[in-house]
Length: 133
Image (tube, rainbow, N blue to C red; front, side, top):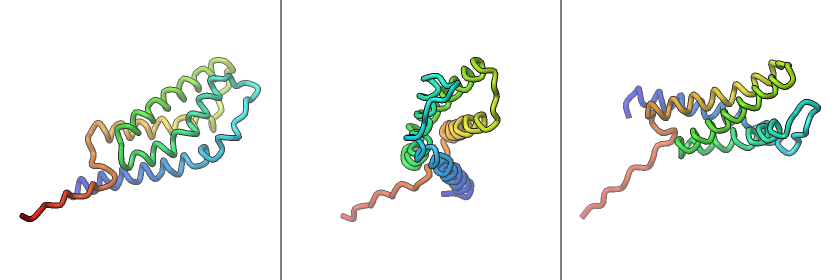
């Protein structure tokens, strides 16, 4: 592997590690999601989906980046729609809520970019053993 591929692999690992850290708290807090005064059932669904997506998808991306990329992209779309409908319904913009939605969307976009550009995998696949005859 050349130096450029090693650098790309390093940055992919950094992104996935940050994704694991970012997704840990929502994953642990998923059982405690409740309906607030302004939340719709779609908001609850989007929040629960996000909680159960970031950590497992970033872990999966070490071995199967394309599947994780699609999974995170669907999550980003659901979150974006939930945020837009919440803002349209309540006319409230909470900066913390926006940051919680922007993070997963950025992870999805970065992973999609790395997949589209065919960056090397995060983990090296073992080389096939050559049989000596």
